[in-house]
Image (cartoon, rainbow, N blue to C red; front, side, top):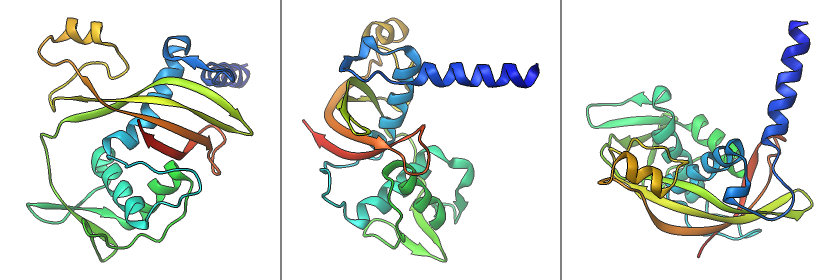
Length: 208
């Protein structure tokens, strides 16, 4: 019985996260759907990924820098302590992040911004940067396993502790002195991940 209940719960959760095929706005998505998409697109917002189009291959350096930034921001527990001023990001962690979010396998090498030494990318320790996050504003099916739409990119102070899936009214109520503002808008195209049918990979990202 316990096993059966587990299967039923998992099935219900999967259904809750299934995204509608038709074009919908943010308010028409469920809370779980909004959170799932916001989190996915925030990975590109916080790493400052620049515009690119479908079938227009990104430079290797862009992929590598994204993988490093993603690990610096989201995987503190996996960083290597280099010295008092620098930390390290493992080469395999960079490659894994690129495959997870773009669906591309790369051989990560040194970039102008980050040098690779002993299979670890050296990056300066940082703190106090403004917080960037994304919120999906429109979601549409393109058919053939692809979706497109638009997202808003927000910026807030480094001390922001509000709900990144919230809205201006909520933020003003929580802290009128620290309300995130829209700094950019992007259109996107995503497809199913080649490694996990429950995830997406980014195929197009265009600044509006």
